[in-house]
Amino acid sequence: MAEPINIRALAANVLAPLLRQHGSLSTHLPDALVHCPEQDRALLQQLCYGTMRELFRLERLAQHFLRKPFRTQDLDLQALLLIGLWQLRASRIPAHAALNETVSATEDLNKAWAGKLLNAILRRYQREHSEVEAELANDPVFQWNHPQWFISKLMHNWPDHWQDILSANDTQAPMTLRVNKRLLTRKKALDRLSEAGLEAKACAYSPDGITLKKPADVAALPGFAEGALSVQDEAAQLAAGLLATEPGDRVLDACAAPGGKLCHLLEQNTQLKEVVAVELEPERARRIHDNLHRLGLQLECQVLTADATSHDWWDGQLFDRILVDAPCSATGVIRRHPDIKLLRQGEDIAALAGIQLGILTNLWGLLKPGGRLVYATCSIFSQENERIIERFLKQQPDARHQSIDADWGEARPYGRQLFPQVDGHDGFYYAVLNKQADDTQA
Picture: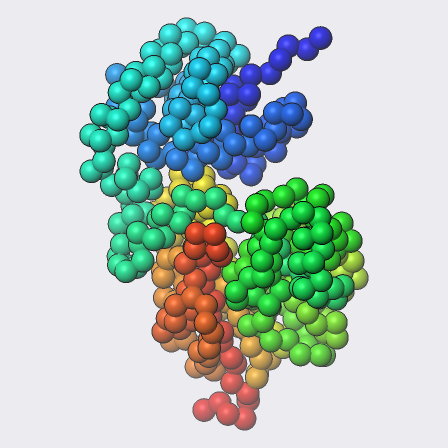
């Protein structure tokens, strides 16, 4: 009979590489789940996501109690300590179980020598947590649970919204669905969910969106396997409407993985002439194929593994519509990916801005005169958003910015910005650019 697996040790092995700035939850957690007993997988996810969501507060607490930081080779113990603190501070796990299992995990990590240390720190936290947290209350990193560079940049970008954004980032995002209107109406989808005992409501801004009151396994969603429903945040669902495709259009979706926006625009318009999706990374391109196949759309789109900053893949035919779903800091989706707060660094933003402008400039040459390009990011930093559009418009005399008339987000000089909302949509930015027809150019 196999030895039982200590789930805290498994979680520590997931988080330790992240503390070394190697990989992410999405790269390390799936493999751990494979080796985790099925009945404990929800707990493993809860430990990993919960700890990462509260990471900066937990780090400050750990620093308070540790005489000296753990060595680099012992960052699995650092991760284990953070997991233990999170359980005592924020979970519903009984304190005695959390403490005993966390201390026992040192043996599974082959570092039993640290058991007494972790036991002492966790018991001190139990006794002294009120005093310690009161002492840390004036520390912005502890108070707002984000790195200082992020807090400062957000205050500069959004002096009227920064506190709400930080608070929303620390909540768990809702599960939002997209209805495939090729197969059923939103009302019918809501009726089916209700019949299945799943409480849901229509989204406020996306005509195809539904938000569940409580997250559910996709296997329990009526119609999911048949392609009637897909999981997609409401803010991401707005792209297809802004693109405003028409029958006979040739459409390009650049940086298309995992394919949610691509599938949505295919669901909305059955008479497009051709749709091409470009994705740089082969593994992410495979995810596009998987989504197209599930929805029965694989014959309606050509997926190319290629670089959107080059023309090597292009056949020379211009596009009527282009969606640039630009690689970005993903700072608008921290609720879904809390490790972004740890893995993203302030200097990353300038590097990403250069890539974004490069992609936008390259793809503009592939757009027909009279065509439309939609620029989208899931970032809340203007350096990746409206400043990119401002720089681009100065370089392209045939580009015209079109105001977005909508009741969602905040109007900006060159687009609209959505902020992450508690129990609502993620943070996104959209801009619409039209290319002047030949006969109107100066």
